[in-house]
Image 1 (cartoon, helix red, strand yellow):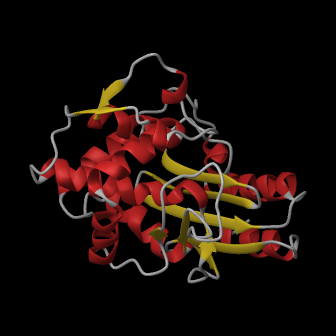
Image 2 (image 1 turned 90 degrees about the vertical axis):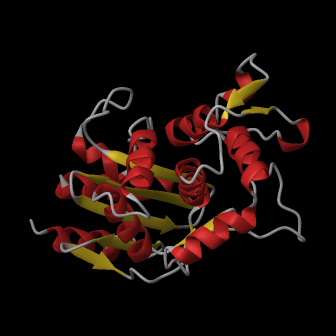
Length: 251
């Protein structure tokens, strides 16, 4: 079945879900719709870190220490490790591999949210933004969500990385190497049937997960994709099944 037909069927079969989907050259649904994207915004942090390293503004071996003020639960490994400081490059790998929240906050404190936003603007991103650091609890004075995104923008971002056209080839290659470590192939990327712990020569992706949010953006070879979903509590299984359908058709 044509990929667009699969996307149309998925959307029609999940009326309570707000989708934004883009597979350049093959399929789309509401690609300009801005949705909450949870950890997808960490891609923009990784891009700024890669840019800073390649520009000589950041030393990849600079050690960043754990700061209790930046500690956060949920995803990540650093909170469980004994080591109290890690190099910038290793923290980037933790973010790409397991969406490490503690590593995210440490790197974001080092480079600053304004720098991440400037890079996003330079890339032509308007709806796809990292809005804040990761928090255990969001108060009324905090940004209401970690990040937002639109599938059309994010698919183009991934396509530019795949083609080594994001800022510079060296920046693209560094991000590609980090994304090769991603261990979450539970959504769209499940359709490629790759080993989640050993797929360095295949799919690259970044996912976002929170209550009522599932998002997966990535590429395999030259084929990029972005599939974002916002939904009501209780619909998680339906959304994951739909995302896996799209991934199977995409593969």
